Amino acid sequence: LQWLRNPGPQHEKRTLFGDMVCFLFITPLATISGWLCLRGAVDHLHFSSRLEAVGLIALTVALFTIYLFWTLVSFRYHCRLYNEWRRTNQRVILLIPKSANVPSNQQSLLGLHSLKRNSKETIV
Image (cartoon, rainbow, N blue to C red; front, side):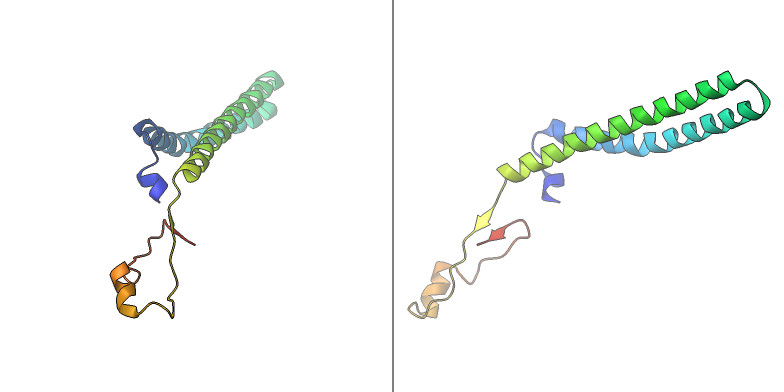
C-alpha cells in the first residue's frame, strides 16, 4: 500500500491510475466487441458468405491480440516500476534485545521500549 500511496514521481502515479481506468473501460468493450464479431461470424456462416465470416473472425483475433498485448505490456511496466521501488525504498530497523547487563531504566532512556513497528519496516 505504501507503493500506491507514494510510488515516486507524479507521472508514475498518473500512469498507474490511467492504465487502471483504461483496463476497466476497455475490458468490457473488448469482450462485447469480440462476442458481437463472433456472433456475426456464426450468422454469416449459416446464412451468408463465408468470406465475411472469416473477416469477422480475423477481426476478433486481431482485437483480442491487441488487447492482450496492451494488457501484458502495461502489467510488465508496472511490475518493473514496483520492483525498482522495492529496491530503492527499503526501511530497516535494528532492534537490540534486552541485555542482562543493562538495567531497564537505561534501556528506556535509549528508547528501546518506545520503538513502534511499522508494517513497512523490516526488523533485523
